[in-house]
Image 1 (cartoon, one colour):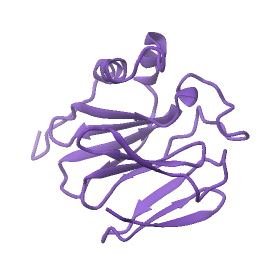
Image 2 (cartoon, rainbow, N blue to C red; image 1 turned 90 degrees about the horizontal axis):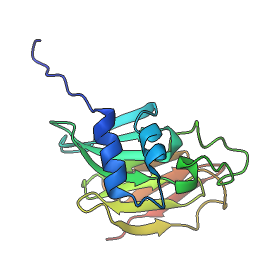
Image 3 (cartoon, rainbow, N blue to C red; image 1 turned 180 degrees about the vertical axis):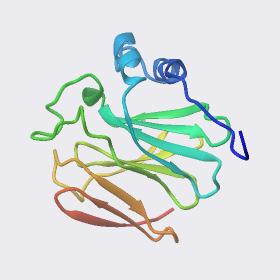
Length: 169
C-alpha cells in the first residue's frame, strides 16, 4: 500500500522477449527459459525516469518501461556467454559476470560493455546497434565499467585499462 505501487517483471515476459527478439540460432528455447531467471545485478533509470536499464548475469541487458515494467529491448552482451561458451574472455567467468551498461544523458543511446573489450552503442528507441567502440581495450578483456558524462562530451570505459571516448553525434 501507500504511495508506491508494486511492479513485477515475470520470468515469462522476459522469456517471451528473449524468444521474440533473438533468433533461435542465437538463443534456443531452453537457454531463453534459463536466462529469464538469472539474477539481476543492477537497475538504473534513464534521465527522464521513463525507462529502466537492467543488467544481469550471462550477459543479459534489458530495457524496461519505468511505469509498468514491461520488457522493451533486449541486448545480449555476447551470445556465447548466454549459451555457456566460456571462451569469450579467457580467464573471466562470463556466466557469473553481469555486463556494464548505461544510458546516454540524452536517453537516446544505450552503451553496453562487452566481454570482448568492445563497447556497443544501441538506439534506445529501436534497439538497433548504432556503433562500436573497438580500439580502447585489449581484445578479450571484459569491459567492466561504462559511464557517460552528463554533458555528452565523454564516455569512460574500463577493464584492464581505462579509455575515454569523445562523444560525437
